[in-house]
Length: 126
Image (cartoon, rainbow, N blue to C red; front, side, top):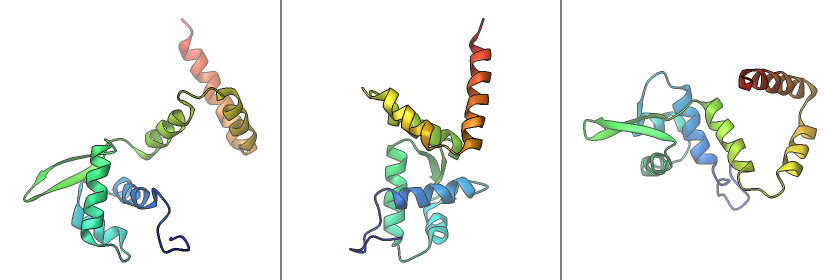
């Protein structure tokens, strides 16, 4: 996916690389990730994305031969939950953000969230 000036939307390449790593059954080299991401990307671009994801602590790595193998630092659900929590961090308008989020949920998701919150409250009680 690209924008009208042929640039990818911000974060889309990182998201694609993370998707490949989450789907993998084992750690992957940059070359393996490059092959899976496909498209017209240069190998160096994928390698740079992996370096940046490592700097952000989104992926872990260890030396393998002359390069590294990479794997996600946490699963996709934990990463999404972290992004949701970051979106609320230090917001003066938390109430408004949560209200708009709640209003945007499908009924089934709202029902599930109510169940999860009730279970969380029960576990917090002494």
